[in-house]
Length: 174
Image (tube, rainbow, N blue to C red):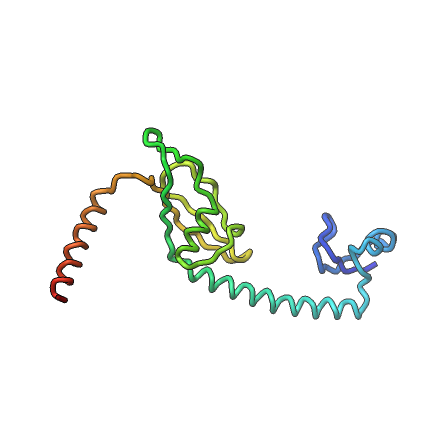
């Protein structure tokens, strides 16, 4: 007996597969429970049309996911957290909610449920993966820094170089 599966059945097949089963199994279990329908010519035509329509929708969803992925492709996050100064361990942890919040501050509204990352409990560099589609995902570098950490010498030099440049421009403008 040839049937069309309406849901995944372990050991038999996946949803929308056309499979051959014994008549008793199909008539007495699969069809009455709504897990399958008889694969008549009209049912096969309906299945083919549904698969064709779903393919178009899935392609559109994948294209939209690729656009979103391209928008955040070059984003790098720096998250400050309260840290124990002697051990370098954070109070609490940095998790996907913090990453989603930082992305929202940058103008990217991303649901925290599609972000994959282990909870971060120490200062350092990590990676968060944003899965927009089963085939489209983006890795975002996340740097966790201490909230009251002393500023590194390189950052001080860069900041000092920027301040006089701004003052010179202000003087010229006056």
